[in-house]
Image (cartoon, rainbow, N blue to C red; front, side, top):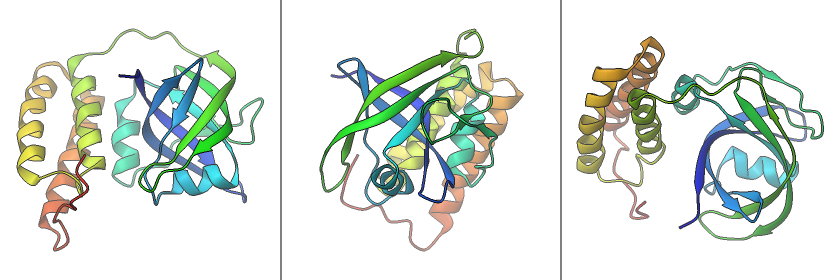
Length: 196
């Protein structure tokens, strides 16, 4: 199995509007593959402006926020690509799309790394941060996963948040839990047959 790194990917459209999305990017021979679902803003942006910034952050509120309508995180310009990066991130990589492997569900944008910059030290994750990342992945797939699986996994992850989370992780967890509740209270909450 390839190594996947959970990041915040920033892309931009041809008008320069930035879009932030939590995405697991796939290691690929010294570069990275970005595989957004179809349809998505990230997918449309990469087709229009074939560059992205992979933002490596330990602030899990950004992962949860992007999935729950809280996407106004500060960005700053990158040095070598026409796409901004997160202003507050531990490190970022500036990526250029070299080619695309088309797929009906998740096209793969193969990217070359133009530049990688470290901005702050990484001091390690606590279990609450890891739990929020896993919950964010569940929330991003609510339409694809059975409800009992989501509820089982959220209940399991709750223990790590309760035992180890800082106020930042607790806030992110609340956002994600509310997103799950709202999804299942909406009339269109039936999962698709696509699976995970």
